[in-house]
Length: 321
Image (spheres, rainbow, N blue to C red):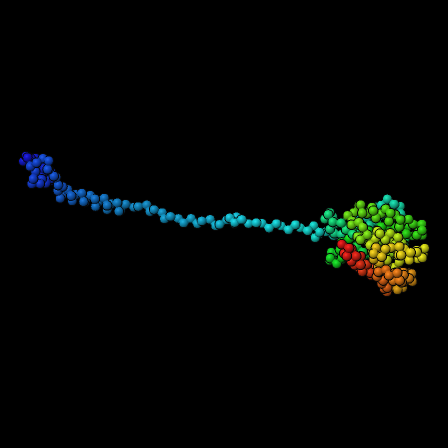
């Protein structure tokens, strides 16, 4: 049992003792009201001060924008840039060359505008012969280069080379002039080696005016296997050749006969001889074009018909291409 003195001490300290305190093993202590009130007050005070203490606000989460989809996210197949056409800014040009013959010492050659830009292409060739006492540049003075370039640029005739050889003895008698032999036996082969030509008669034409047309008749008909077309413009037919024309024509196989273009002015001194040739061609059944125009035997006449000549040669090359 608890002694009186112990109970008194406990009560003095604010602890109630249950009535049954007789056994030391059943002592149950209860907190007094004051003690409970004290605990409650302390708790409320702590809560109050905690609520009054400034709180550092928790920052709201920022919205970080997602990066825009990259343009390279998709597989893009780039289109190949078109290969620039090297011919667009090119122009046809004329070169002056020399040859190792005193009878044909030089020549001019017209090269189409794509000749240097495309080294894989070969071209047909037109040989144009000048008149008596003139030089190789007579055809250039008549405008053949400018008109050929314009027609080729416009796509109205195909590109081809134009060779203008010099007949150095054009003032001399034909029988004293080896020009024709040099042209056929040497010079044409030289051009085929030096320039990108298409060899063969189907890609080669021979034309001339006045004395040059006389050379065209003689060498063109004698060497019919070398030319596919003959342009005979205001021909000065060589005197000794007039009686041989029918034999030369008869010797040519019908299916190998070159195309022939014949023209002259109605006031040309050579008109009668040209007309006789036209009649002979018709009598022998040779396919040809015969044109009688107004004009005489001069530069004005030939200059007026340059475009027509070029279109005829161009049509021949285009057909054979």
